[in-house]
Image (cartoon, rainbow, N blue to C red; front, side, top):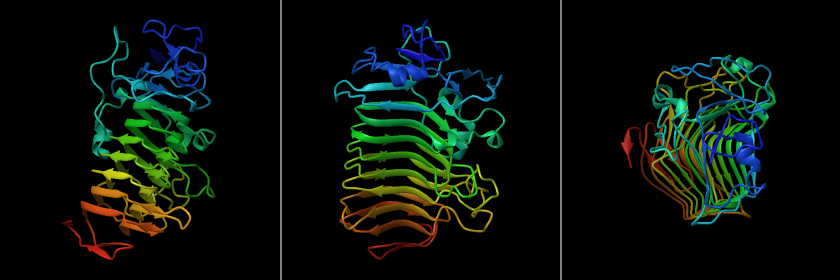
Length: 360
């Protein structure tokens, strides 16, 4: 069932008569028009407003016409309950005007900043809080929202979406067995001098047995990826990339930038083939001279809620991180195995030392 730019709630949800994006993702299930096992295909374009206008874009990715003073489109999906055999799927596709569905191929995942800048982002349906005017025109309302949030959902999959300019890009809150694949979250944060440590690319919270795969996060104020109390979740081939050493929305107001690439809290979580990178030529510190990121991968635990049995496998940190791999708080039976660090670092908690330029 396609979902694109139409605003008619009576649409049939077909290629010729598509649903609006907001209706397809928020209301179609509660109205009985989506069932477990259904797939919603979402057209590429830049979705910027609650009236769900999709700004036309040219071959170079420039917005042709701009929606003025539009309230940013922020998606909240609640209580979608699929099954292991029949999940709900929301899939962005490449062709703007398909004659038939499903599409043949999915867009390739972003790996680093060069891929992000060179790849055809038009392949991805994009939710963002500003149009072609750039960061200066960012919506302060939109930046306090999540781009797409799943609340108490089970067996829901998101494929091939791009969010830019929100507080948090993608957020799973509760539920279980959800899947993020080929997602991009860029420029996450909140404007204002006193709005510190806000902005995460991808969050999986209190949702066990999830999969986060082939995802890319660029420039957040706080964290790239946060996996919290989501036991047995798998994070694979995901990358946090820093182009700016500070929150891009605040410009020169302070030195806040991505502090942690990956934060892991829970039990039996696997993080594999992932990386934290500082872009070539990017500032190694914010305007006040504090280096970013401060942390590459950190496993966190609390006395009342320890983190155990987690594995960070074949991951690398190519940045000026003060600590590339860390254990903080009540952690036991966690392991860092394989990988690469581009500078001397210490893994707190087990006294293992890894030297610059040496794989381990």
